Length: 385
Image 1: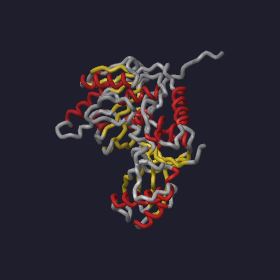
Image 2: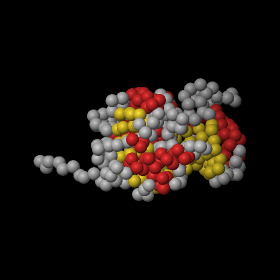
Image 3: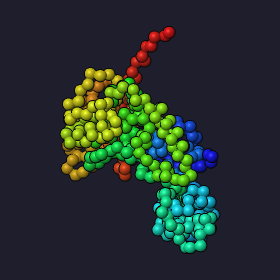
Image 4: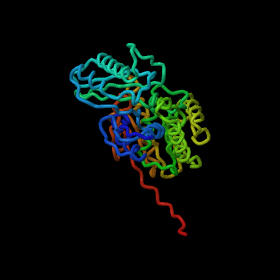
């Protein structure tokens, strides 16, 4: 039987609104805060959000939230929770933690206290006389998060982070997370009937995410989640959620997606990754310098994460490349172009002012997403029957 659960989808800074849009598209009303999107749901939502959220980092169960300024308060309020609702007698429950602007600043101490309180409660609930629990079963990773003296206890439902789609074989030196790549695509005006190009494709992350979006394929379809091993999560719920994902996928949607890169080794890696993701025939990859890019196609979309020139000695070469890029792309008068970089003077070298800029964090690097909007494609005239 379904029971109400509060879930938190965690997010990279700057893309919370995109995660929230995804959560709402799945039918859940939500509240947005820094780095997290909170919503009321049920067990089915655990399956659907893990399978479908392209831009979230993880999905967690929010177990409790309370004020805690002393270790005693933390212990007693943690112990007061009905932990047997979530963790079976043999469940493994490691505790991780973080503390920001809180009196209880020692994270290791907070972790130990939370662990001890849960052990005490589960011993009571399962009528155990001994001082320890076996912890040989499924994994229930608990986090104690303190922010301004408010303690939040969560259980991770995802396992590996959601950026792990289950198919990347190899990657380059500075890979873009799949969740961020999906966000970059979703922030554009691209639709699957328009050409899509990434001229700095590296290991193919952006083109592969575009293909998943273009064919409406659930990004978690090829992987497993830790909550699939939980006793109280009925297998049938997972089966239904995976069937829904299969039914909604549009494998027949034709796509025109191209990834190019100067490095022939990266092109081979990108081809291997696309093949592993099931897009071997759908995405084209080509070795090419950005200055040589030309296209006679109309109303295309370019999305790319070029080198930033952050390393000493690279800056001048990267700035020259931005100049070449601007010259090559100036010929694409109907295209929309979206570039992510940390270089503060990108527009100067590119030779054009962006229509719009959006601040994003690529890992720990503060970047801007420069958006150069092209004209809208003309509406297709369909026969009226």
